[in-house]
Amino acid sequence: MTTLTIAVVGAGGKMGMRISNNLQRGAHTVYYCETGEAGIRRTEDAGRTVTDTDTAVANADVVILSVPDIALGPVSAAVVPRVRPGTIVLTLDPAAAYANLLYQREDIEYAVAHPCHPSVFLQRKTKEELDDTFGGIAAPQDVVAAIESGDAAAAETAERVIREMYAPVLEVHWVTVKQLAYLEPTLVEVVACMIGDLLNDALRETVDTVGVPEPAARAMLMGHVQVALANGLRGDNPFSDACLIAMDYGRQKLIKDDWRSIFDDAELDSVLKQMLHLDHIHR
Image (cartoon, rainbow, N blue to C red; front, top):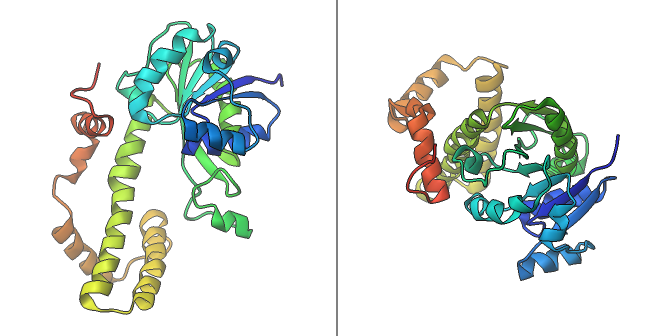
């Protein structure tokens, strides 16, 4: 395959550093763009040369906008007018794309790709894989991606970059931008991450209020979280009758009857407005 020219805008940020670490090891020509003083220092400390953004994106086949969601509107407005026709502009989260905040050009391709992170059920074989809970270092992960035009050739090129920047990658799952927005934030942030934080709150109550020794409480929780996920998501073993009664009690105490409304379009717009600090979602 021919090598690509890739520009990473925001190369010194948290995700910018992660994906740059992987891209640096590949065969493609990569330009690293950063304007913040701390980001420039991190990029240079990693042994990478910082390139002027206008110069980098003018020569790029793929431009990766590795900046926070709330900055994607102004950053895309500054960068996208300077790219070549046919360039693939890749963002890392779907919120700005779904909210139509990205600068529009009919002669480029917009794609978005978000890592799934290594599965809790991943069979890890090395200490490096065990330590890599986020992904992009040693533990394999899936990626979910969308390309607005649906162009197959552009998607193939984008996938080459996606597999390298998030490596090691098992599968790249292609969906629509809206479907990706329902995956993140609704499924994994509104629900899964919230529950993870709630588990920590419950642990603290068990230790600090009830007085259970923390090692005992933590051991009980960690093991049962695995059992709960394995039984609930994979059906590995049925929950006991007594556990089912306790689970129903927990739902009544903790879960609102209308919780499924978070999957309504209006609720998706509501959470994205808060995340992006918007008065309304553009349509």
